Image (cartoon, rainbow, N blue to C red; front, side, top):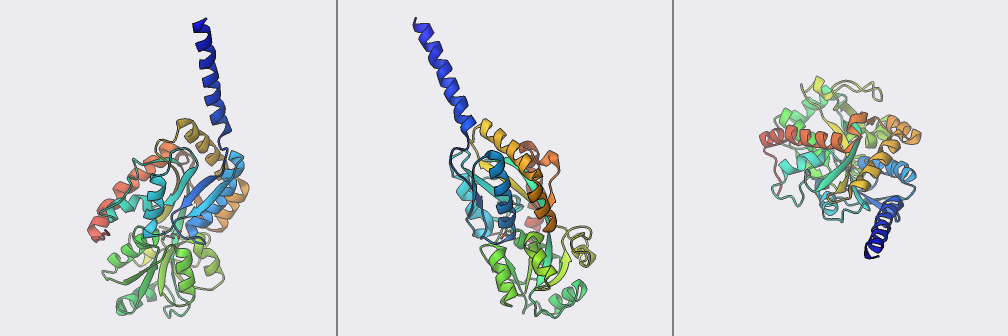
Amino acid sequence: MFKKISLISAVAVAFAATSAFAAYPEKPISMVVPFAAGGPTDVVARNLSQALGAQLKGSVIVENAGGAGGTIGAGKVARAPGDGYTLLFHHIGMSTAPSLYRKLDFKPLEDFIPIGAVVDVPMTLIGKPQMTAGNAKDLVAYIKANKDKINLANAGIGSASHLCGLLLQSALKTDLTTVPFQGTGPAMTALLGGQVDLMCDQSTNTTGQIKGGKVKAYAVTSKAKLANFPELPPLATELPGFEVGVWHILYAPKNTPAAVVTQLQTALQAAIKDAGFVSKMKELGAEIMPADKQTSAGAKALLSSEIAKWSPIIQAAKAYAD
Ligand code: ASP
């Protein structure tokens, strides 16, 4: 008799557990973007959140937590419960922060479970409308001759714009004044208003401004020319070897149950194929990640190889933050 009851309750417990997972999500999911609203990471996240929500039959809400090059938002998710209701949508900054920050309150490879990589986005080097340099070659000469007058906007130490600026300054063997913002959305407003001079930023923020002739556009940071900007040379034409691609990964905090991670991974892979998402990314110059990187294992491999890649480059540039 006793045995019979415990068997029934074991079945009941197992059923309850299965139906709890089957019910996920039963409330809105917060997708933290560690930069201000209206910027390039935010734009991708907002499009992704729609497609992901549709796949999960729930709602995914973007929450902007900008500051300190993305480390504030990432730290916030590292400390969030691993229950599937707080996710992080971050970029290449996740791999550079450990080398840039002497004190970091999270460990990228230990505190998160990557769900999958989503897009790889080229950067563009742009200037305020009043910049007089007409092309990349003129700009390089202008920077060398006016280094004390020029400033470079970025989204804080650890951001992609900061990384691109570091590489630029080290290729030109010069130090420029940098002006940090909570994201390159607000930095773009300052650039359009002529308050800052130059900025590297993802094409997901600059495409409209470049095509509308609102900013001076000088170069792309990809190895080769891009279909979306046939008129722009790769920066490597002037500065050999210069290359930055801003890959983006969706993460869950560690301790997120494996069943939830699997469900999120399946939904993410389907969301990345969503026709609306694909066409928006194409329009903004973002490249969809190959299928093998849209997995938890593939994204983790990408993250660890990028941490290893950037560490010696950043050490050589002697760029640290406390
Ligand atoms: N483009 C930014 C960066 O430089 C961040 C953003 O606002 O999306 O990392």
